[in-house]
Length: 328
Ligand code: T6T
Image (tube, rainbow, N blue to C red):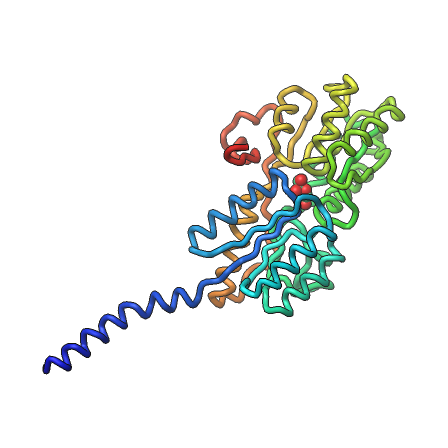
């Protein structure tokens, strides 16, 4: 081999060694993560997103709205789309109808959509009215509402008046929870009456005021279902302020520190922990798999619950699902 031939052979070998890395770099995707609001549930979801992104070497741009609502989430989504460098959006839509248009615009701009925690349309991305998102990854919230109803019915001995404090209408997650709760109370517990459902617009102070008013006008109130972090915290606080802890039972969706403290104090009888870490982690994995050409990703993934009561709260297998954010 001449010196020139050996030089060319060396250059070719070097190029071949470098090419695979170039190919990987070109395949890299960038994801926008847009949850519903700043709260412990979505903060844990963010941990899942970041863990998967680190593992898969994917860049994520996270934007968390300060308050809940279409009017806050839409401009943030539009700005993420306008960046022009995102391939996927992982989003918890804050309204099942009003977020369809803004998400369709993202898709038209070339950004694929994965919904976590909440969905658009009816959540059936195969046969439903909205089919463009890759997948819905989240809780089966109607089933969660049923579980909450059975838990509350047990805690109050199967009779009395109960009340639901929720956040906003037209949000798939909390709407499903109230539907499942009322369904079970109506079908399985003839001696329990659901006396009301209020929307606190994701504001804990409003939830306190609403629950306080219901406690005052319903002397036989036996239980309250708080359908999310702010609702359950507000409901629990109102019960404590009225000196009715242990008399009026609270079932709390979302395993916050507050809910667990009140479980230990006997104010809350059941906590439904969702799996936000799993939702975030899987959403990033799904984006990576879709980008790699996987075509059979499930269009709906139910992540399940951990049900926490005073008997199992110290069991590490259950306690690991309490929402824990380092430094918070
Ligand atoms: O309950 C969660 C979430 O599942 C829901 O969609 C909105 O509220 C929370 O983020 C809790 O604040």
